[in-house]
Amino acid sequence: MNYSTVRYILALLILHLPLLANAETTETRYLLALSKAEHTLSFVDLETYQVTQTVPVGPNPHEIALSDDRQFAYVSNPGNNNLHEISVVDLIHRKALKPIDTSPLLSPHGLVYQNNKLWFTAQGSKALGRIDIKTNTLEWVMGTGQDFTHLLEVSNDGKSVFATNAKSGTVSIFDEELHQPQIPPSGKLPPTAQPYIDWNHTLIQVEKGSEGFDLSPDKKELWTVSSNGVLSIIDTQKKKRIQHFQTHIPGAHRLKFIAKQKQVVVVSVKTGEVVYFSAKTKEEVKRLKAPQGDTILVDETKNLLFISCPMDNVIAVINNSTFEIVDYIKIGGRPDGLAIVSLPDSSS
Image 1 (cartoon, rainbow, N blue to C red):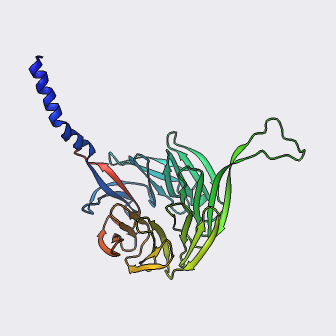
Image 2 (image 1 turned 120 degrees about the vertical axis):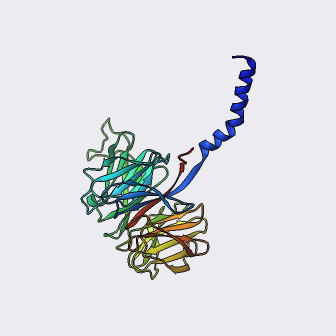
Image 3 (image 1 turned 135 degrees about the vertical axis):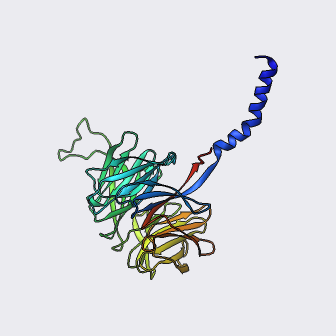
């Protein structure tokens, strides 16, 4: 190969480098949405609101958690306190993988993925569990002793866990702490005694039927709302309820913070009401009517609210700035769990 040929090939490579770079970085944002009727996970293009693909999941899909690298989705299947399956979906290749068996823990529902660990509530076992994804083993179980342990959140360092126990009307806060050895009745510590790690469990009474909850952006407050409309605010550092009030939202079901607007939105699965509150003053800002809402998801990028409406078989899309319903998405019967992910285009 002569010098001129080498120069020609190098020039072509340099010319096409921008095209190659663009091809590698082209992505599409998708709304991932579960249908409990069709037992599917749908990929909804967030530019067109059209379903581009569906993947089969388990028999009773409820909640979604995404892996840290956004390549896999995990879907809980609680059933009637009798199932023990978390579905796994390969998001890059759009296919279902072998599900995770949570036995002996029953009825997995709430999910959080963090640092290759999958945390979940086990409603049928009154417990929380954690799976090591690398080894696919159940490595940690903590009982709540409460009824209908439904949803959970985990601190960034994995040392605090928050969960609602809807039928007991309580919130569980678990904190991992270092404990000094317990002095035995003899008054002398054995030579092998050492400090040890244990979890402290704090139970905070709220209203029965408190199911949906969210942590404030600074993690200092936990807000939860009950089905009879009582909103409770918990100081997560003092671990006590510091305020509660009647929202007059029958069937209040889910609640989320909207960080950009410093607001909290509550939806009703009974009346379809969508109510915005000031996170600072706690006063009502706006109330509007939508289909009966279940799961909600805030898209901070476009300042939109997505509400799964299983009674009406649609996902409502609300502009949080104008408080107006701007569209409806159809993915099949009884939509539920939602998530947003950016994925490489198939042509990239």
